[in-house]
Structure formats: C-alpha cells, structure tokens
Amino acid sequence: MNIFELLESSPATWLVLSSLVGLLIGSFLNVVISRLPRMMEASWKQECALLLDVEQPAQDALTLSRPRSHCPQCKTPIRAWQNIPVVSFLLLRGRCNHCANPIPWQYPLVEIAAGLIALWAASHFGYGWQAATAMLLGWSLIALTVIDARTQLLPDAIVLPLLWLGLLVNLFEVFVPIEQAVAGAMAGYLSLWLVYHAFKLLTGKEGMGFGDFKLFAALGAWMGWQQLPWIILASSAVGATIGIALMATKRLQQGQPMPFGPYLAIAGWLAFLYGQDFAVWYFGKMAA
Image 1 (cartoon, one colour):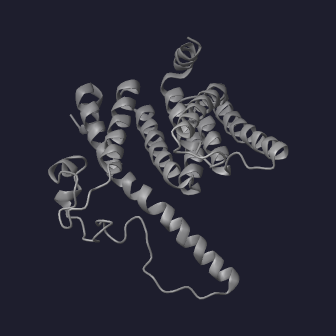
Image 2 (cartoon, rainbow, N blue to C red):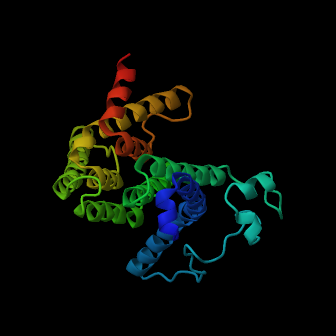
Image 3 (cartoon, rainbow, N blue to C red):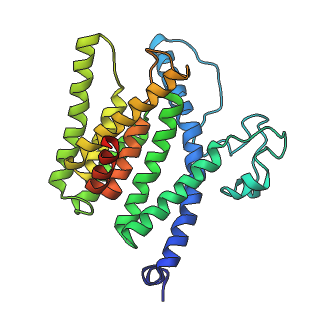
C-alpha cells in the first residue's frame, strides 16, 4: 500500500497529515505576511527612483527566502528547533531565545489558523483534489486577511494567481462549471468597480481599493456568481458593525480608512464551505 492509498483508505491519517502540513504552511505564511509588503514597498521605491533618475542607496535585496528567518528585534537568526510551528512559541514562552523580546501572537495564531483550514477542508471534502485546492484557497485568504489588516494592501502577487487558479480548477468543474466561474469572476470585479465609481461620484471619496475588486473576482472564480450576493452582504454587515464598534471605542476616527479585504475573505471562505446553508443561518441570526 502506497501513501496515496493509505490516505484514501484512512480518514484519520488524512486529517492528521493535512493538519500537520497546514501548520507548516502557516509558518511560511508568516514569512509572506511579514516580507511581501516590504518587498512591494522596495519595488515601488526603486520604480520611483528610476522615474525621477535618483540614485538609491545600496541595500541587500529582500526576498521570501533571503535573508534567513531572524528575530525582528535583535536580528539573531532563528534555529531550526526555534521554528517549529506553535511548539517553538510554547517552548520559548513567547519570547526570543536571544534578546527575550516578545514574539508577536500573530505567528502562532496564523499557524493554528492554517492548520485548522487544512483540517476543515480535509474533513469537509475528504481525500482528493477538492480538499487540496480548497486548502490553497484558505491559506491564500489567511495571508490576504492579515496583510490587509496590517497594511491595507491586497497584493496582486497573491490575488491574481488565486483568481487564475480558481478558473483553472473549475475548468475541470472541481467546484462549479467553468461558465459559472467566469461569470463569477466578471461579476465580482464589475460589481465592486461600479460601487466604487458610484460612491466616488456622489462623495468625491474612494470607498475601497482596487484590490477588493480583484479579491471579489477571485472568490467568484472559485465558487461561481451565485455566492457573490450573500458574500458582499455578509462582509458589509460585519464590516459596518465592527467599524461602528471601533468608532464607539475611539479606536477608529470618522473618515479613517478601514480594510474591507478581511471581511470579504472570511465571508468568502464560509460561503465556499457551506454555501447557501450558511447564508440562511447567518441572515436568520441577523434578523432575529
């Protein structure tokens, strides 16, 4: 019996292995979350310098693989045993082994979230391509959620491949027919594009970023146009509720921009797994 036959015949093994892989992917997602926005900023600075014919100071190029992982405070490289998902955070008691500065809670939380996403997808879809591709979607949404919450950026380097992967997957009707996937991608982008321009025409302000259009289009590519109405309604309702709560507690000032991507991502993931059933439950709770 090979590994694939074992995973197919043993649901418990499939769930455990998926969860462990998810934890490891979560560790990599933390690298993406930390470095990708800085890589984008460095690229923008380089483009501006070339445009203005200004010489930039020499500095080491930052990539996802270089330099090796290190403490953001003291810059001490992290050893292999200090980089075990969740376990190392507990062993180190949430502090750097060298300088004793606190390790941000983001790191174990992202790792746990990635593990849970993998477990969720593996248990929901069972062994096969549906679960594997669903994990890729979920992990991408985790990275986008945290990056947007921290920087108000939804990087094209994640969103656009996610959109095309959704279309590619559904070319084989893994989740929905390709016609529905294409219609979903088009409807997702155009609907928010129209809302953006209508809001700007009425108020003179920008209500959202173009990254939100692309993310909504990507969700449409994965699950078809039918899920889009409730995704936008649920994400808007939750976003508005949290925004009001933040303003009431003085943590958000009136007119201060607030990222919308995290709410789209969370509502999109729930729609992906539970579809119309979750929509009925959610809006039933809202109306109660």
